[in-house]
Image (cartoon, rainbow, N blue to C red; front, side, top):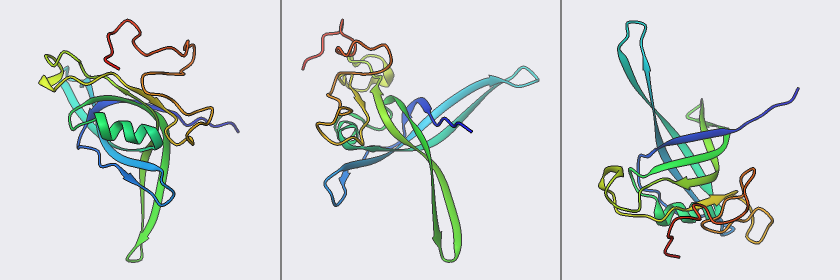
Length: 161
């Protein structure tokens, strides 16, 4: 049987990322993402529900998150689900998380909207767990998504770098 494991999330970061490097020098960071859902109940009342998702970013994507992402930043993540399991004090534990492969910062550069946060450039990073120089290694400001021309993200915007 075929299987498919893709996740696309759009939400706000719940804490500042803490960038670290593992023994082989690969960058990794864990972030929390709050994803809001709004729907009507059978009685016609609006129900707001927030889901908190743990996301792990690797490689260049993790470094970009460490540099540009702050608590409250709107962010889009594309990746895959991964189930972590461990045993502690004889009890088996498990947790479902997202391994982020692409990240898109969504904040305003004007500093006016988006909760008054300071302006941040729009950055796209992809396949953060790919080795540097590989065919999947991405540069800041580019997106290789389906149908992409490989050009700058938001080519009409004035990006200061």
